[in-house]
Length: 289
Image (cartoon, rainbow, N blue to C red):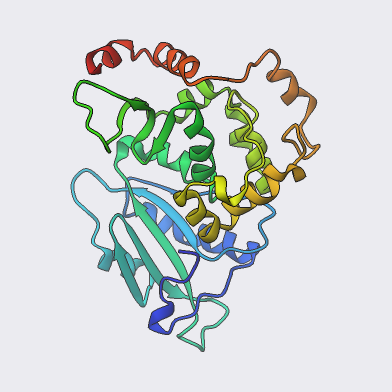
Protein backbone atom coordinates (compact mmCIF):
# COMPACT_ATOMS: atom_id res chain seq x y z
CA UNK A 1 0.00 0.00 0.00
CA UNK A 2 3.01 2.26 -0.25
CA UNK A 3 2.88 3.24 3.41
CA UNK A 4 -0.61 4.78 3.30
CA UNK A 5 -2.70 2.01 4.88
CA UNK A 6 -3.13 3.96 8.13
CA UNK A 7 -3.49 7.42 6.62
CA UNK A 8 -7.23 7.56 7.41
CA UNK A 9 -6.45 6.77 11.04
CA UNK A 10 -4.30 9.85 11.41
CA UNK A 11 -1.01 7.93 11.35
CA UNK A 12 1.90 8.98 9.15
CA UNK A 13 4.42 6.59 7.61
CA UNK A 14 7.30 8.68 6.20
CA UNK A 15 9.35 7.02 3.50
CA UNK A 16 12.30 5.04 4.79
CA UNK A 17 15.89 5.71 3.77
CA UNK A 18 17.73 2.57 2.55
CA UNK A 19 19.91 2.25 5.65
CA UNK A 20 16.95 2.46 8.03
CA UNK A 21 14.91 0.13 5.82
CA UNK A 22 17.65 -2.52 5.90
CA UNK A 23 18.06 -2.25 9.66
CA UNK A 24 14.32 -2.70 10.21
CA UNK A 25 14.20 -5.74 7.92
CA UNK A 26 17.08 -7.21 9.92
CA UNK A 27 15.20 -6.47 13.15
CA UNK A 28 11.77 -7.81 12.24
CA UNK A 29 12.47 -10.77 9.95
CA UNK A 30 13.77 -13.00 12.80
CA UNK A 31 10.71 -12.08 14.87
CA UNK A 32 8.43 -13.28 12.08
CA UNK A 33 10.59 -16.37 11.66
CA UNK A 34 9.52 -17.43 15.16
CA UNK A 35 5.86 -17.30 14.11
CA UNK A 36 5.83 -18.57 10.54
CA UNK A 37 7.24 -21.59 8.71
CA UNK A 38 8.81 -19.48 5.96
CA UNK A 39 9.49 -15.75 5.72
CA UNK A 40 11.02 -13.60 3.01
CA UNK A 41 11.33 -9.85 2.60
CA UNK A 42 10.54 -9.17 -1.04
CA UNK A 43 13.59 -7.51 -2.64
CA UNK A 44 13.74 -4.05 -4.21
CA UNK A 45 16.19 -2.52 -6.66
CA UNK A 46 19.37 -1.39 -4.89
CA UNK A 47 19.25 2.21 -6.08
CA UNK A 48 15.70 2.82 -4.88
CA UNK A 49 16.02 6.13 -2.97
CA UNK A 50 13.49 5.24 -0.26
CA UNK A 51 10.74 2.80 0.70
CA UNK A 52 7.11 3.41 1.59
CA UNK A 53 6.73 0.22 3.63
CA UNK A 54 8.31 -3.17 4.31
CA UNK A 55 6.82 -6.17 2.50
CA UNK A 56 7.10 -9.70 3.87
CA UNK A 57 5.73 -12.89 2.32
CA UNK A 58 5.07 -15.71 4.79
CA UNK A 59 3.78 -19.27 5.07
CA UNK A 60 1.94 -20.36 8.19
CA UNK A 61 2.95 -23.48 10.08
CA UNK A 62 0.93 -26.63 9.40
CA UNK A 63 -0.50 -26.91 12.90
CA UNK A 64 -2.28 -23.55 13.22
CA UNK A 65 -3.00 -20.15 11.73
CA UNK A 66 -1.21 -17.14 13.17
CA UNK A 67 -3.44 -14.63 14.97
CA UNK A 68 -2.71 -11.06 13.80
CA UNK A 69 -3.14 -9.95 17.42
CA UNK A 70 -0.16 -12.12 18.35
CA UNK A 71 1.85 -10.79 15.40
CA UNK A 72 1.04 -7.22 16.43
CA UNK A 73 2.21 -7.98 19.96
CA UNK A 74 5.50 -9.46 18.76
CA UNK A 75 6.15 -6.52 16.44
CA UNK A 76 5.06 -3.94 18.99
CA UNK A 77 2.45 -2.67 16.54
CA UNK A 78 -0.09 -0.14 17.76
CA UNK A 79 -2.63 -1.03 15.06
CA UNK A 80 -3.23 -3.47 12.23
CA UNK A 81 -5.56 -3.80 9.23
CA UNK A 82 -6.52 -7.17 7.76
CA UNK A 83 -7.21 -7.20 4.02
CA UNK A 84 -7.68 -10.78 2.82
CA UNK A 85 -4.34 -12.63 2.87
CA UNK A 86 -2.48 -9.39 3.62
CA UNK A 87 -2.24 -7.58 6.95
CA UNK A 88 -0.68 -4.15 7.50
CA UNK A 89 0.92 -3.37 10.86
CA UNK A 90 1.75 0.07 12.26
CA UNK A 91 4.96 -0.26 14.29
CA UNK A 92 6.70 2.61 16.11
CA UNK A 93 9.13 4.65 14.01
CA UNK A 94 12.58 4.52 15.68
CA UNK A 95 13.37 8.12 14.69
CA UNK A 96 10.11 9.55 16.10
CA UNK A 97 9.78 7.89 19.49
CA UNK A 98 8.21 11.03 20.98
CA UNK A 99 5.50 11.18 18.31
CA UNK A 100 3.17 8.14 18.39
CA UNK A 101 1.45 9.24 15.19
CA UNK A 102 4.56 8.55 13.10
CA UNK A 103 4.89 4.86 12.28
CA UNK A 104 6.54 2.33 9.99
CA UNK A 105 4.13 0.24 7.93
CA UNK A 106 4.87 -3.48 7.66
CA UNK A 107 2.79 -5.48 5.18
CA UNK A 108 2.66 -9.24 5.68
CA UNK A 109 1.09 -11.40 2.99
CA UNK A 110 0.28 -15.04 3.76
CA UNK A 111 0.38 -17.59 0.96
CA UNK A 112 0.10 -21.39 0.64
CA UNK A 113 3.38 -23.25 1.02
CA UNK A 114 2.92 -24.67 -2.50
CA UNK A 115 3.17 -21.22 -4.07
CA UNK A 116 5.63 -19.52 -1.72
CA UNK A 117 8.57 -19.72 -4.13
CA UNK A 118 6.37 -18.65 -7.02
CA UNK A 119 4.93 -15.61 -5.22
CA UNK A 120 8.41 -14.72 -3.97
CA UNK A 121 9.41 -14.48 -7.63
CA UNK A 122 6.41 -12.59 -9.02
CA UNK A 123 6.22 -10.29 -5.99
CA UNK A 124 9.86 -9.25 -6.13
CA UNK A 125 11.22 -5.88 -7.27
CA UNK A 126 7.90 -4.06 -6.84
CA UNK A 127 6.28 -4.48 -10.26
CA UNK A 128 8.19 -7.39 -11.79
CA UNK A 129 4.95 -9.38 -11.74
CA UNK A 130 2.72 -6.81 -13.49
CA UNK A 131 5.39 -6.06 -16.10
CA UNK A 132 5.92 -9.76 -16.79
CA UNK A 133 2.15 -10.30 -17.06
CA UNK A 134 1.98 -7.44 -19.58
CA UNK A 135 4.73 -9.03 -21.68
CA UNK A 136 3.17 -12.50 -21.54
CA UNK A 137 -0.32 -11.50 -22.66
CA UNK A 138 0.41 -11.05 -26.40
CA UNK A 139 1.90 -14.55 -26.63
CA UNK A 140 -1.00 -16.32 -24.91
CA UNK A 141 0.52 -16.79 -21.46
CA UNK A 142 -0.63 -15.60 -18.06
CA UNK A 143 0.55 -15.42 -14.45
CA UNK A 144 -1.51 -15.38 -11.27
CA UNK A 145 -0.71 -15.96 -7.60
CA UNK A 146 -1.21 -19.66 -8.31
CA UNK A 147 1.25 -20.04 -11.15
CA UNK A 148 2.08 -19.80 -14.85
CA UNK A 149 -0.73 -20.54 -17.32
CA UNK A 150 -1.48 -21.09 -20.98
CA UNK A 151 -4.45 -18.84 -21.72
CA UNK A 152 -6.99 -18.16 -24.44
CA UNK A 153 -8.11 -21.79 -24.71
CA UNK A 154 -11.60 -22.83 -25.79
CA UNK A 155 -12.21 -26.17 -24.13
CA UNK A 156 -15.27 -28.41 -24.26
CA UNK A 157 -16.68 -26.53 -21.27
CA UNK A 158 -15.86 -23.09 -22.71
CA UNK A 159 -18.43 -20.38 -22.04
CA UNK A 160 -18.43 -16.87 -23.48
CA UNK A 161 -16.89 -14.30 -21.17
CA UNK A 162 -14.89 -16.89 -19.22
CA UNK A 163 -11.33 -17.69 -20.17
CA UNK A 164 -10.09 -21.26 -20.02
CA UNK A 165 -6.53 -21.56 -18.78
CA UNK A 166 -4.15 -24.48 -18.24
CA UNK A 167 -1.66 -24.47 -15.37
CA UNK A 168 1.84 -25.09 -16.70
CA UNK A 169 3.94 -24.65 -13.55
CA UNK A 170 4.40 -22.75 -10.30
CA UNK A 171 8.15 -23.37 -10.19
CA UNK A 172 9.97 -20.08 -10.88
CA UNK A 173 13.13 -21.90 -11.99
CA UNK A 174 11.22 -23.92 -14.58
CA UNK A 175 9.37 -20.84 -15.82
CA UNK A 176 12.53 -18.75 -16.10
CA UNK A 177 14.19 -21.57 -18.05
CA UNK A 178 11.22 -21.76 -20.43
CA UNK A 179 11.23 -17.99 -20.95
CA UNK A 180 14.97 -18.03 -21.61
CA UNK A 181 15.77 -15.98 -18.51
CA UNK A 182 19.04 -16.41 -16.64
CA UNK A 183 18.26 -17.62 -13.11
CA UNK A 184 21.67 -16.60 -11.79
CA UNK A 185 21.14 -13.08 -13.13
CA UNK A 186 17.86 -12.90 -11.23
CA UNK A 187 19.47 -14.15 -8.02
CA UNK A 188 22.22 -11.52 -8.32
CA UNK A 189 19.62 -8.75 -8.00
CA UNK A 190 19.12 -5.48 -9.84
CA UNK A 191 20.37 -1.97 -9.20
CA UNK A 192 17.70 -0.17 -11.22
CA UNK A 193 14.19 -0.67 -12.55
CA UNK A 194 15.51 -0.61 -16.11
CA UNK A 195 17.73 -3.58 -15.27
CA UNK A 196 14.59 -5.48 -14.20
CA UNK A 197 13.00 -4.61 -17.55
CA UNK A 198 16.18 -5.63 -19.38
CA UNK A 199 16.12 -8.97 -17.59
CA UNK A 200 12.50 -9.72 -18.50
CA UNK A 201 13.22 -8.97 -22.16
CA UNK A 202 16.56 -10.80 -22.27
CA UNK A 203 14.86 -14.09 -23.09
CA UNK A 204 12.31 -15.21 -25.69
CA UNK A 205 9.56 -12.68 -25.03
CA UNK A 206 9.28 -10.13 -27.86
CA UNK A 207 9.80 -6.47 -26.99
CA UNK A 208 6.56 -4.46 -27.32
CA UNK A 209 6.49 -1.42 -29.53
CA UNK A 210 6.08 2.03 -28.03
CA UNK A 211 2.48 2.30 -26.87
CA UNK A 212 0.09 5.21 -26.77
CA UNK A 213 -2.53 5.54 -24.05
CA UNK A 214 -5.27 4.47 -26.45
CA UNK A 215 -3.53 1.16 -27.12
CA UNK A 216 -3.51 0.15 -23.47
CA UNK A 217 -6.28 -1.91 -21.97
CA UNK A 218 -8.34 -0.52 -19.10
CA UNK A 219 -6.43 -2.65 -16.57
CA UNK A 220 -3.12 -1.38 -17.98
CA UNK A 221 -4.22 2.24 -17.68
CA UNK A 222 -5.16 1.64 -14.03
CA UNK A 223 -1.68 0.22 -13.40
CA UNK A 224 -0.08 3.19 -15.13
CA UNK A 225 -1.89 5.51 -12.72
CA UNK A 226 -1.33 3.49 -9.55
CA UNK A 227 2.04 1.79 -10.08
CA UNK A 228 4.97 4.17 -10.73
CA UNK A 229 7.33 1.41 -11.87
CA UNK A 230 4.82 0.04 -14.37
CA UNK A 231 4.23 3.58 -15.62
CA UNK A 232 7.96 4.07 -16.19
CA UNK A 233 8.09 0.79 -18.09
CA UNK A 234 5.32 1.88 -20.45
CA UNK A 235 6.10 5.59 -20.79
CA UNK A 236 9.91 5.66 -20.54
CA UNK A 237 11.42 2.25 -21.15
CA UNK A 238 9.26 1.30 -24.12
CA UNK A 239 9.71 4.77 -25.59
CA UNK A 240 13.31 3.84 -26.33
CA UNK A 241 15.05 5.50 -23.40
CA UNK A 242 16.20 2.06 -22.30
CA UNK A 243 17.85 1.56 -25.67
CA UNK A 244 16.35 -0.32 -28.62
CA UNK A 245 18.23 -3.41 -27.56
CA UNK A 246 16.59 -3.20 -24.14
CA UNK A 247 19.80 -2.54 -22.25
CA UNK A 248 21.34 0.23 -20.19
CA UNK A 249 24.79 -0.52 -21.52
CA UNK A 250 25.62 -2.46 -18.37
CA UNK A 251 25.18 -6.04 -19.61
CA UNK A 252 28.29 -8.06 -18.90
CA UNK A 253 30.03 -9.94 -21.69
CA UNK A 254 29.41 -13.30 -20.02
CA UNK A 255 25.68 -12.48 -19.79
CA UNK A 256 25.58 -11.81 -23.52
CA UNK A 257 27.34 -15.08 -24.26
CA UNK A 258 24.85 -17.02 -22.17
CA UNK A 259 22.05 -15.71 -24.40
CA UNK A 260 23.77 -16.75 -27.65
CA UNK A 261 21.49 -18.53 -30.08
CA UNK A 262 18.30 -17.57 -28.28
CA UNK A 263 15.30 -16.94 -30.48
CA UNK A 264 12.30 -14.67 -29.90
CA UNK A 265 8.80 -16.09 -30.09
CA UNK A 266 6.65 -14.70 -32.89
CA UNK A 267 3.23 -16.40 -32.71
CA UNK A 268 0.86 -17.70 -30.03
CA UNK A 269 0.78 -21.09 -31.72
CA UNK A 270 4.55 -21.33 -31.54
CA UNK A 271 4.44 -20.47 -27.84
CA UNK A 272 1.62 -22.94 -27.12
CA UNK A 273 3.47 -25.83 -28.75
CA UNK A 274 6.69 -24.94 -26.93
CA UNK A 275 4.89 -24.62 -23.58
CA UNK A 276 3.03 -27.93 -23.84
CA UNK A 277 6.24 -29.68 -24.82
CA UNK A 278 8.46 -28.01 -22.20
CA UNK A 279 6.10 -28.53 -19.26
CA UNK A 280 4.83 -31.93 -20.52
CA UNK A 281 1.20 -30.83 -20.45
CA UNK A 282 0.03 -32.19 -23.81
CA UNK A 283 -2.16 -34.89 -22.22
CA UNK A 284 -3.90 -32.37 -19.95
CA UNK A 285 -4.36 -29.99 -22.87
CA UNK A 286 -5.94 -32.65 -25.08
CA UNK A 287 -8.26 -33.70 -22.25
CA UNK A 288 -9.55 -30.11 -22.05
CA UNK A 289 -10.18 -29.68 -25.75
